[in-house]
Length: 329
Image 1 (cartoon, rainbow, N blue to C red):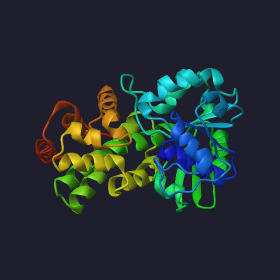
Image 2 (cartoon, one colour):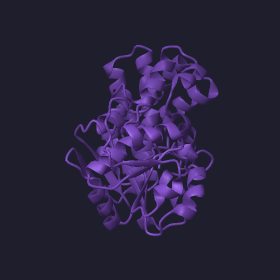
Image 3 (spheres, rainbow, N blue to C red):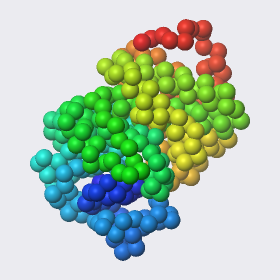
């Protein structure tokens, strides 16, 4: 459900894994391109899609008979979209979040929104996350992800449906950790991007990534996640990819800010959703609810939403009081 770059790439990957895939898209143009020309040039130029992938603008047609419903819409639109789709959901289908965000206003993770809106038990809600860039996945480059569900047999079913010759999938029952890793790394990538835009080098990037991982682990521990998750694909792996790659929307967004563009200019120039921009506020709210210190997240929120100059945020971070490296867990 979603014909953007990641939704289309996952559709191709699922087809390569042996699945029969239908893609729902909200715009007729990309849907027609997938059906008629086996491409989605708006989002994945140069990628030839399997001829067996069908696309439709009719959600009922897309959902009919589905064993897995992969949700690939922007995080802040999930609640509204899913509410419309609930009457059409097959009664036994597993609902799988491909989204990496936290909901504004509620601080709910995407799996929590799915369970609430669709009113389904935890064994029908899955999360799929890892260091996965759409263009690379669609090109068949070797990659991996974590299939997480609180019910281990369901995670194993999702694993079996997504493994392909070039895509390796691991299972986890730590839904909280897998989701937090995916959501908070976007905020860290915004921070890293700002640093790169300011002209700082590899030492600064390594600093921000490492302390960003510490923030993710502190919040995860407070919410009951397994800290080992953050050393894996959905934690450190996704963080490294998103903070290092020019394909990262969040890092690019931050980099443009660091180079002097205004927030309005960067938003206008950003064609696809940079989830960390909107998720930063609910993540910080979640941290404050649980008395978790997240200075990088707070700096990003101050820059994006309260008008703090980036250089002032950098000075505030570097001048924080001395602490032991491991604290607050």
